[in-house]
View 1 (cartoon, rainbow, N blue to C red):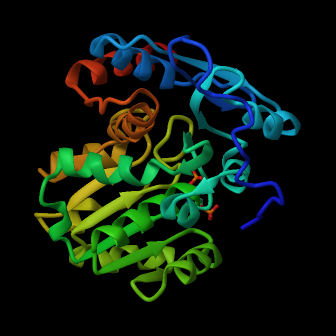
View 2 (view 1 turned 60 degrees about the horizontal axis):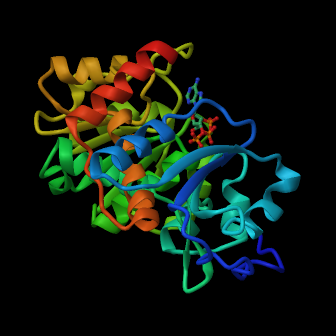
Length: 295
Ligand code: ATR
């Protein structure tokens, strides 16, 4: 992990000044279309909280200065997206989840100190709890992919107590490197070993980009999974990936990428605005409608 000499930036900016309603922002470059404003505005509106959430396009060479003056700019915290997530980790006081994932996506102030976490971990786990209660009876999970999203998933599964996490990736070296970071409960496996593992897996998770619009489908035979298995896909465009469609037609419980996206937003809102919001069917419909028009 890169540690900047000036990490743990002090809150030099007097965040408590003024009486303006609290506001948070999403910092990215470029400021790609994001569903986060839609989600947070929905919660602000339905909870009757006077607050704001805006997108801030910040180029990499201005990122440090931007978060150094985050509260002076009127923000109580922020979400961070590409390409700033690793830098956000290095410039803040990260919790165990952000450290394990190697990236921070949520920033807030605590006693004047800029803190960070990675809410993909709880987004993934809380969505599974909501969609497939009892999923954690699984002793073995198979995770496909070994990028940043996979790290959040693997950390969440280990934290939750899943006994064995098998990690398959097209590039085996990446699976090995990730497994090394997490210890003996995470086993790297070859991509061509997937079929042999499926009959004994209680949970299958796709963290690769396969199945996303414009990408090839993920060729995995869910018919080989046991009947109680749960299938999760992090891809949310399309909402129903070929993997999820196959799992549902077999009667397996599933958890989709949109659910994870919604659940990962909860903690930031709570940290910034002081109320824990709910992922409601109405919110899901709202974001689904937005995805349908601008996917
Ligand atoms: P993220 O941070 O979203 O996880 P990433 O770091 O780019 O994104 O990782 C993408 C994942 O999708 C990787 O596991 C990648 O496999 P490689 O490590 O071998 O690149 C996987 N992936 C992408 N395209 C794939 C394909 N056509 N077949 C199999 N895996 C693929």
